[in-house]
Length: 117
Image (cartoon, rainbow, N blue to C red):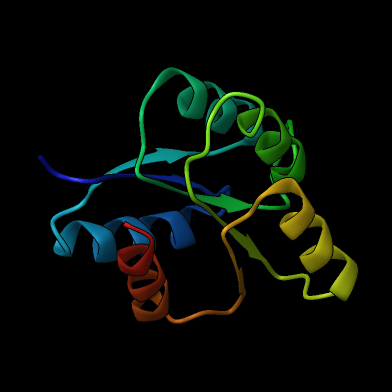
């Protein structure tokens, strides 16, 4: 059975790029364009890894992660252009598995996902 990844990213260019790279690795990829959609998909479906942008419309990535952690232990990789220590700490406290700063190499993201699954 193929592994499933949820990419929650409001920048279409980034979500498309990640989807393309992950599908090349034989992963099934679902995309969410905002925080509410990401939360709905994360709670309704089963994913092996979730890639979650921090700054998204409708609901930020931290609040999405907080809600996910109430019922699921799915590995979550936080994506952000913000690299302040307090953001890293908050993600860690909420249960993020890893943190990737933008700009990033899609190959690095694929590598981190493979490590988690």
